[in-house]
Image 1 (cartoon, rainbow, N blue to C red):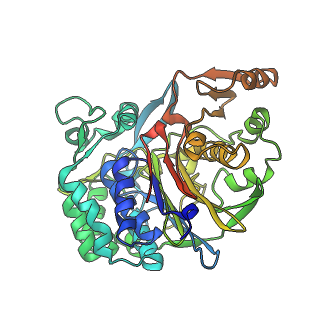
Image 2: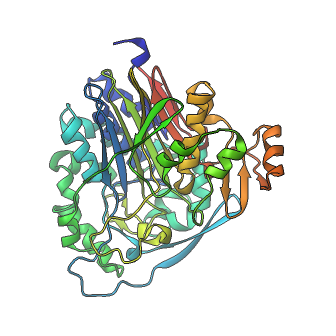
Length: 458
């Protein structure tokens, strides 16, 4: 294998990346490592994701050049139910000075997809035994994981959603919120993961944990049923592509149309970028995380997952927090029936050229996912800077008539944006509001400093 195609992994937490690297070193495929890393994120990044959430995966096969996009996002519950869901609980969170309304409670819980998605990625593209892929996350769950400083700051913003139910004993075990470097520990989560290793993903859909999910949601007035779980399936999605900077970018078509935005971006000056990134709707919080892996054969797997803001519904004795995706109104398509798949802004993507894979990348950040990916691809593919520098470089993001800008964005660019009529809001620090990219490519991998991410090459 050429040095330019070294195996690599990038993720939103050092422990997540280390698990992915461990699986790669053991001979695992990109999918094996990505699944193991996603499960590790369900231990160490639980303010962002979890086994009770959903996501999307993009897989690139180096031998054939084929790209596969899988949808294991959450589904609307209520199949076979004749009752009306109880009212949700309104929650307001702040991103910087940007207020974002949410709703939580049992009625906000959608049908989870993370266990099914991990299982399907492994079934199609893995080569290690399932139990070996799950094992590292069990070990993490037994000991707990240090909370990165960047995620500790995020926890402050979303504490109203994270502390109900078992959350108070997990995120504020001494009566105060965990701080950066403190150990995040979920009692019982190792048991849930051990059962997952033994029984497989069906455990969450037609097994013991699935029954517990239905019972807990029903107890809080939600309408998630046995039929919802039994009928849940991972979906194959159409792959869309665009030419950008002489390369081909491929992914699913997300709610913000990231690939179409890149394809239409004829110029990459700040004003052109700001115009291209204009938001179609209100900003959303986006408790999301991403894993990007390239293996020794040049295959790539990118997986983005989320828990929403957190419903406050926990599986007793198992340390699993259920999602709150029905409480994110902007993701609900009018008239979407029970069993229907919710929409999302997540966009795990791959970039290729005539020699194969150039970059595998994804981002956290809901409505800022497209922003973060566009800025990163411009940095790497147009400006030719190192991957880590491209990810860390200050970003701009337009929302609700305001152009948000991180400190360090070039002064001449800000002047041009102001002259173009943009009302600027300068942030004091690089902030998780602006997304969280993790990407791996030819001999490089990097996580986003805004989220405490890490990249590793083997």
